[in-house]
Image 1 (cartoon, helix red, strand yellow):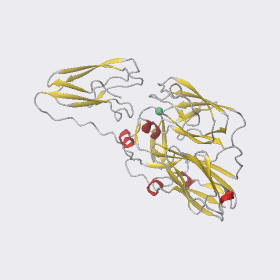
Image 2 (cartoon, rainbow, N blue to C red; image 1 turned 135 degrees about the vertical axis):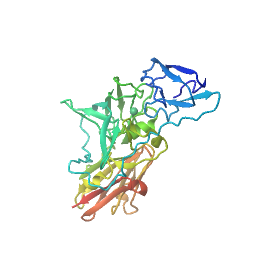
Image 3 (tube, rainbow, N blue to C red; image 1 turned 120 degrees about the horizontal axis):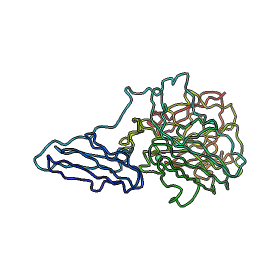
Image 4 (spheres, rainbow, N blue to C red; image 1 turned 180 degrees about the vertical axis):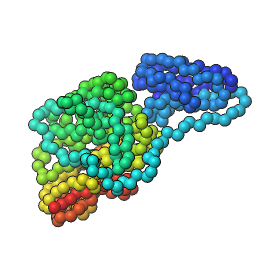
Length: 395
Ligand SMILES: [Cu+2]
């Protein structure tokens, strides 16, 4: 994403008028550091910006989230005698105080339900994903703007939070997702659970548009879906991801089945996560299912001797997971479509960590030997200390 030209020389004291034509495929604008700006321009639209008399160097950029970090910067250089450059304003908004991730989130807090229902018997799964800009608490007293894949209930009420809905089916099932963009910028969706040419179904659609994405699941696994509009890191950081679980054939039932989607979160402003922090990989929170330490407050549960299966997806955008249950040992590990360990092999070995690169997924199974509180973490410890921590209470 570029302004062409990206640099304009203006004799000091001259008036600058810029004709801006959006010849790209997404909405853009031009904002100068002194506040002059064009409206947001859809593809094909044009605008004229009167920048006034140029007295010194100035910078402009596209204000659509992430576009400045993608390279949409315009340098206005005043020629003639020297003058001070104008610094662009900082755009990293942090909470007024360092959040206490161990604080009680309060009586109104409701944890994201981590239980995973069985796949429905149907072989065609239809969903409608509705993207909107929403404000959501992601840690005690920390609210951010997200762009999640949400859903509209029969009564018209909207619910959207990261991660998006977990879809589940069997090998051979077809999924048909209608993606509706009711947000404020272009978005898209990419389902790893199906193989197809990306050109059409993964295209970016502008606000007010929709598309239908249809795929057939040929292989089992826990698969990422995510927005693939540039910069992808920023769209993922703003909650645009979720899981599709395709059961391996003959997957046995278990007593408790859970799903945890690990992701990074970034503080920001009204437009969402701080694009500079996202581009620099400076995550503020690492979370399971969208809220720091939420299962410390509302633990997962099991009974002694029950078989527990936990699906884990590392949604990123940049970090993997080293999923571990403190005090537990896995006798079953399924990762990226294959069993690495099954109970019959337990005499020869066990597993302590499910290691997932960004976008990988799998599940582990274990039984708990005695009652207690068993923490689960990513064993990348600084990440666990940023919120990727929870508890299984075993009774
Ligand atoms: Cu997006």
